[in-house]
Image 1 (cartoon, helix red, strand yellow):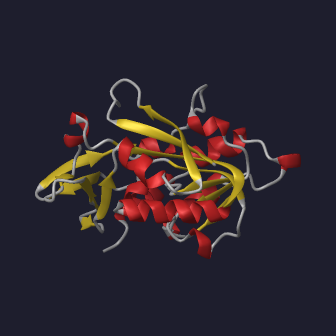
Image 2 (cartoon, rainbow, N blue to C red):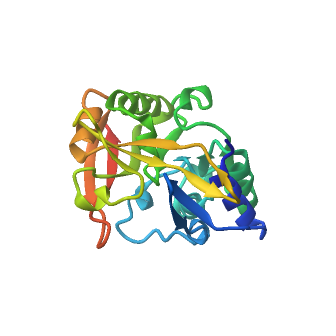
Length: 243
């Protein structure tokens, strides 16, 4: 199966879009907007990304909304570049990121950081879009945090987001799945574009308490877990700091 999500964004960027891009869950399709991935990201006061110091690692950069904003805003010693290194597994999206002017683009899986970056390479890191759920389990999330420890400095800050499976709004999300064992919940995301189905993505949905459990006994400490704004109360943003 091809990465139809990446192809849709790539074709949108090059004015070749032949949409719509849809979520598909069984026979039920729901249209998914593409334009928003190219809208400017505003680092308003209080945005967790605004406090990151360069060099910064963007994990799962997509079309580069956050990367472009952060590299404009983040301060690096003596103007050091690149301010942002964007990790994106899709070759098509990696090309979009380069064309849009992201400082450094690394085509890689965000769960293979040790294979691509040296120890202490970054002062900040973030992942926007709930991609940490692809870790699929608490041990998987803890292993990811270990890899992130390796590639960040002793004073680093990390930010990521998630959907709280205990919130009623999350249960209404497209692709929501109860865990038959009754312990956790998941989300299955599969896209359809130009009559092609993409590979399904499986996300585990972590509660804020799950995150605290995963962080325990790592090099990180939970600085804050903030609930999303109006209409996004089911979402949260985690800020971690090295202990």
